[in-house]
Amino acid sequence: MKNQPLKRKFGFAWQGILFATRTEANMRRHWIMAVLVLLFFIWLQPSALWWALIILCMGLVIAAEMANSAIEVLIDHMHPELHPQIGRTKDMLAGMVLILCVSAGAVGILAVLSTLKIFV
Image 1: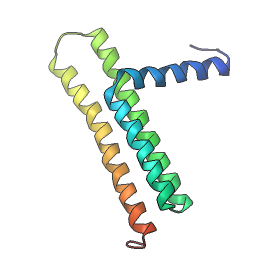
Image 2: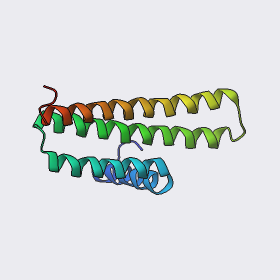
Image 3: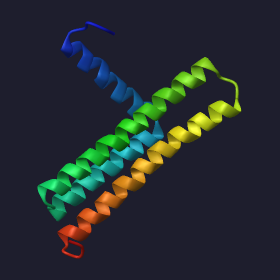
């Protein structure tokens, strides 16, 4: 909605986050993993740069999962029957999330190795 007060826009965004979390199992998995990673990093105490990279990666993964879910909901509403092109579109969206998850995992591994002075 255009020209809404900022407080109301934040309310809509928060509703979207809550809806995605309630309705999408993968979204809940990403939140659980984010909490576990944060707890692990609190224990590990990496440098500020690694914190920034990990938080950025977590945000990208969660945002991509929300985009994936939102587009899938829209596609299913607009075209509920099976169609090869829709299947490919959903596969590409899932691939986007997977690429970000693997990339985030690689950043996490590098952060651990660097913090433990195994990899500089």
